[in-house]
Length: 98
Image 1 (cartoon, rainbow, N blue to C red):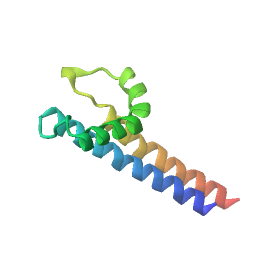
Image 2 (image 1 turned 90 degrees about the vertical axis):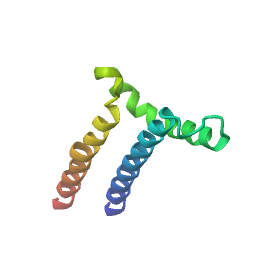
Image 3 (image 1 turned 180 degrees about the vertical axis):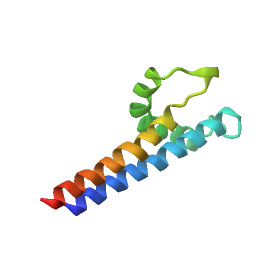
């Protein structure tokens, strides 16, 4: 049981880092620092988009975009940090107390 709990916590932590990497990548691309014609840059961009878009798209549809800014990664990171991880800890403690 502890292994499953630790695995889920590590997966949430890893996904948080992937979200941060995707945000940095998008900004570097938007400001012209990264060249999309470079095959490696393009593959990294596609990979990050495929990993993050299934989670970010529903959040993006619910949020307004003031000034064209996308706050969906921040919302997802906050949900991970303050809802999912504490929820997993509470669930683990409840299961261990029985």
